[in-house]
Image (tube, rainbow, N blue to C red; front, top):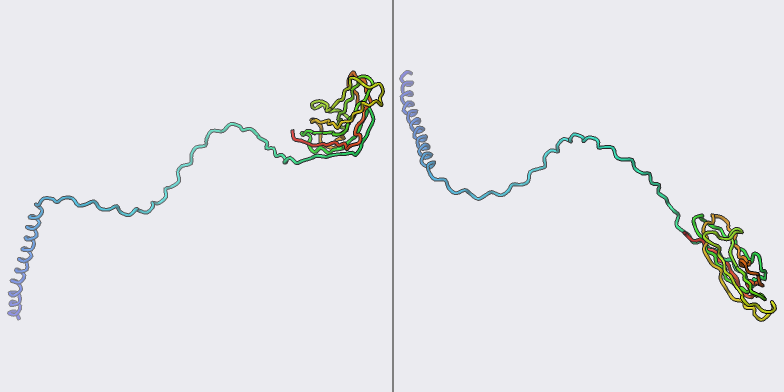
Length: 228
């Protein structure tokens, strides 16, 4: 048994020595290769590589510290917004066939009108036949009234006829009837019912004559409310 063991040791020792020699020889060759090629000159740099893909968005940062309060502003003005209703048409016409009114002083005709707003004006128009006769110089005026008073915004609305030379008698041949108009605007009349009248009267400092209104024709009063 001892002889067999001795034989095995004798056979394995040369094998181990041989393997160690091979390992040393391989390490020596590597060292020589490294020493040889590391001593060569460096080659030119390669081409620049392409840009990489964009990175993903980062995590949102934390909120900043709140800023300080600003200075107190000046006191503002209070503005009241005014809404006005759209304007709508408002007018009326009164007409008479063959009025043929022969008075020299007084109201000839009247037309009642409903005024919608106080900040508006009234436009009035009388159209009809007028005539004046007299022996000497005379003058007559036809004018409008509003609720019994003449217009004061700004002035009366009137029309006159003056004759310098009359005829010897009132029933002479000078008897001309002409269609005429009395027209104007009056402001300052409050809203509501307004009695609009057409009157005949005398002129200041002149005697009256023989007046006639609306002979043998249609007479009319037109009233219209207008924005100022």
